[in-house]
Length: 84
Image (cartoon, rainbow, N blue to C red):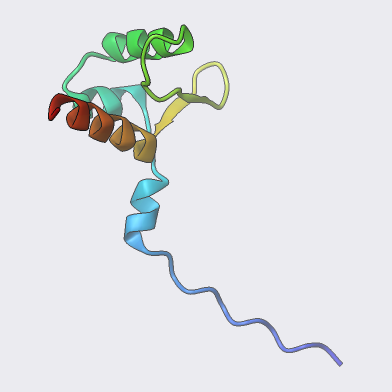
């Protein structure tokens, strides 16, 4: 006798999906009103330990994304520093 199938999980909360979203360099540049080159410069400085800009996730040679949640956290930290 087979066990009863487990119930389907509840649908994800749209806010959680947005937090897990990955964005391209072009999308991130548009969001921050910067050029893609400026985004890459910020990422390079982060690797050198200069700033707290989020590191990208690489899925291969030509597929790189940033976690939108990390970018928002970075922006919130910048805003709170500016408010001091």
